Amino acid sequence: MMTKLKIKSGDVVRVIAGDHKGTEGKVLRVDREKNKAIVEGTNMVSKHTKPSAKNPQGGIVKKEAPIHISNLSLIDPKSKEATKTGTRIEGDKKVRFSKKSNQVL
Image (cartoon, rainbow, N blue to C red; front, side):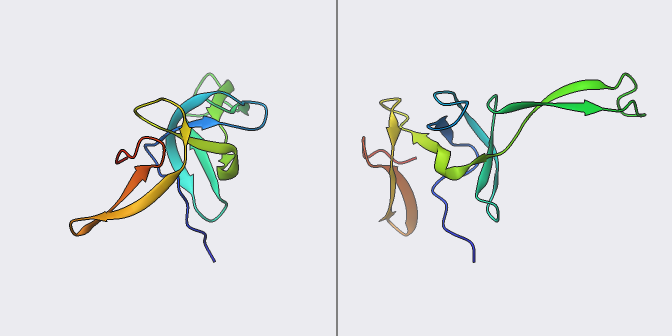
């Protein structure tokens, strides 16, 4: 069974635990089955690659590794602080809003 995630791709988040605590970035991809997200510019790992037709030089490539959702906190667009989210119905649409500034995300 998959859980309901509060973070979606495109959101700006801050890492709140682990080696990369305090760094911020945009969510590139979310893996709902593993409850992990890939955040732009954080949790960079070195991957050693063999020379190939696509990459004739080979060598060491830096890339983002997934971070568990529990270690991420959504950033409020107004106050630039960590916030929780809620949902409400506006008209006939369900929207997410920041609980700190009450602003629609």
